[in-house]
Image (cartoon, rainbow, N blue to C red; front, side, top):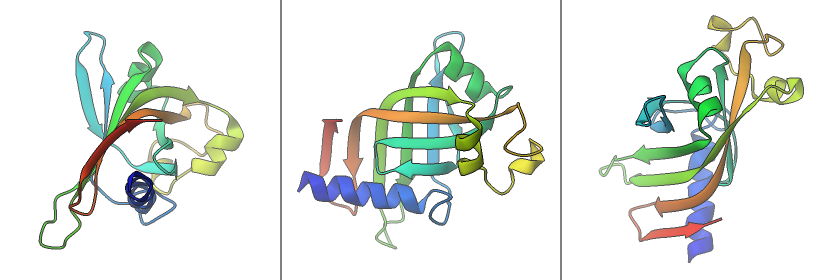
Length: 149
């Protein structure tokens, strides 16, 4: 049963990424310089199931600054459309790192980023790579499972 729920959560995450159809309902929480959690909406650029999620941002953004100062993070992917039967809450807790490798940046470049950067080669453009350590999954209005990767 757990493998099915984990696989379904991975499908949902993919559907919320640039690889899928990209949608809303994704938030990341990082620790600010006063030690408090801060939450921002984000778009997933790439995902490997529930294991690794990658986001686009800029080096001068608050998200990147917070990730540099503290690698602890949480991601929540959610939808509460009870009538449409797509109710789920996927909470992932883990670590985040800044990636500036040009090949990774080219791979995750998303339409709309040109508003902030000239292209994947722009030194201000970077990736945030989130790696899941533990999870709490509730998908398809089914049972809730929690675990560690």
